[in-house]
Picture 1 (cartoon, one colour):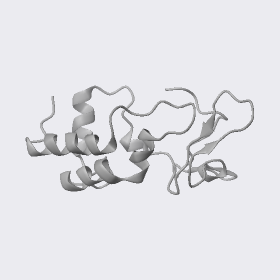
Picture 2: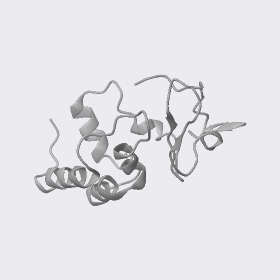
Picture 3: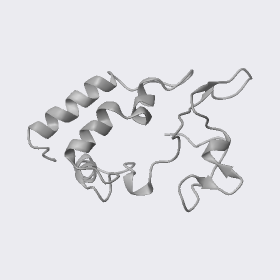
Length: 128
């Protein structure tokens, strides 16, 4: 929940604009900076990029986020089984638990997150 620095633009494809794609700074792994900066590392993954805009959660109530998670048109084309696999094993989601120097990791583990998503699905995947 902070501005991207340096400032960037999403572009039509969501991967930056000509001359400044995400991969201009984000490489295949986290990169620890060894210079004075307001941030201490640059996140990285071979598939690094902005999530599609239709996946955005910011400012939405939890019930709407829940419905969005279950909607293949807004979750990357995933049914509930694929949604579970994505949560439990996707390497981009795994970044949340190893975000690099100077960044707070997500609580718990990816394994626990996958278990929680599976339990939610197994109990009917209800939304508030």
